[in-house]
Amino acid sequence: MLHGIGASEGIGIGTAVLVAEPDLDYSHVTPAGPEAEKARLAAAVDTFIQKTSALADTMREQVGEKQAEILSGQVMMLSDPYMQSQMNDAIDAGGCAEGAVDSVCQMYVDMFSSMDDEMMRQRASDVGDLRARLLGLLLGREAVDLSAVPAGSVLVARDFTPSMTAALRRENVAAIVTEAGGFTSHSAILARTMSLPAVLSVPGVTALVKNGDTLVVDGGEGVVLQNPEPSQLKAYRARQAELAAQRAALEQFRGLPTRTADGREVQLFCNIGSDRDLAAVLENTGEGVGLFRTEFLFLDRAALPTEEEQFQVYRTVAEGLAGREVIIRTLDVGGDKDIPYLGLKQEENPFLGCRAIRYCLGHQEMFRAQLRALLRASAFGKVRIMLPLVTRLDEVRAARALLEELKGELDRSGIAYDKNIPLGVMVETPAAALIADLLAREADFFSIGTNDLTQYTMAVDRGNADVAYLYSPLDPAVLRSLRAVIRAGKAAGIPVGMCGEAAADPRLIPLLLSFGLDEFSVSPAAVLSTRRAIAGWTAAGADAVAERAMGLATEAEVAALLKGISPR
Ligand code: PEP
Ligand code: MG
Image (cartoon, rainbow, N blue to C red; front, side):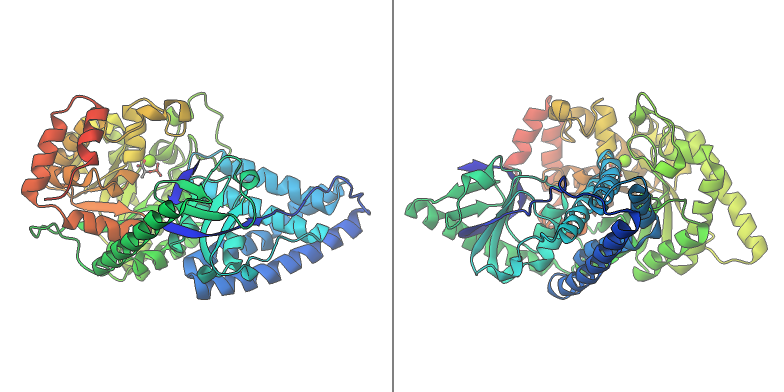
């Protein structure tokens, strides 16, 4: 049995098809002079744009708008004159077209993958995909055509890229297995969207498996069986039928209000990183947006987005949600999230440095443009503004003062905005949690960012695998913090939400319900399962579990209690 990361649930049984990658070595290429190399590059770029746009159309039809956006994003990136001029500069410096593509793409890959942010790492993988295909075009060695694999294929590849996904026919593929990629990689996200069982990061799998092997892929457990015994096959087929029934049962939660078993309604919102994610929110019947990470608007470009550009995006989201709420977070840059053109200082401890609200308050011109854009967008929907990484009340006061000043400016210019636009605090530092009662007097709402709250409470870098064992929202220290923050918000009469990954963790749901959380914000794909998990609990049942959990002394005890817990 081979082990990897279970990245997309489900059981796939079929015949192995090894997807070999083309050899992209270009060390033998000698530059034919700047003009000739630039012409080769331009021709390859044209073909790339043509082919990728066609693939995006296929994907839009077969999978959905959101997935097609990944490919059209590559087209956009490559159509950007800035990226092309960087490549031409590399050619002028004496390189061949292949070298120019390689070095410029590598620069972007390094930039994106150095950020401790799931979406940025995905972007790194998109640029990696773009580079490989552009090199393939230049060298005349394109990847295999996945649209031709026979029904019942289990694809085994080193990595599984968005363009490979676009080409495959879902009905012919039983599962995918790769050597690279994690739970939050694009391959994983696409596989989940296509309901395609996937196990990623299986060491050496492309060498261990042979074409024609029978493979059983269990995407929930993260295991792959190679040429299993008949009895194993039978057991997995039975499990496959069971899972199909469970999936069908989840459908009944599409479009329903989110309610506990005894009728308490809570809000189930979604986290998004761009206006393009709106489609997924609506498709999965999310009830609003609980976190719009605006930093993505500031990346992939050479200069700050203007107030007008930002306004257009915020307005699209506010209008698209048609009366549902959207909580837009002001720029969370700095620390681990670098944006080259901002020229951020190198810091010894970036997580403890000039990040988020600290950076924005120190760069008023930029902050004002974002706040003005947000205010203007508030005339087109239900917009709330949220401040990240707050540690002191002063920060909320300073942001509010600025907001009031900008409201005055808009009034004088006769520009419409929501005069009661709520200004909330993202509670994600121990300082904010400890003064939640003080913050609650002046904030209009809270949203708990458990990704950072866990990191700062446990004093553990959220991206450091060596100390990952300490990074758990089930730790008594984090649980006490969550309870205190929710209680402080409730006592002050303000709504409290949660937009960290923990909001979709079924183990935590009874505790969060018992503490009184009003709003859960999860990835669009987790809406139905979270709605179902919430529907399973009554107040009495959730309270009983919370009381037991809060009486335990260690994370291991809490995890053991919540592992086998069943609702009600
Ligand atoms: C968080 O910290 O929980 C959060 C939602 O924000 P981010 O992951 O963007 O830091
Ligand atoms: Mg955070």
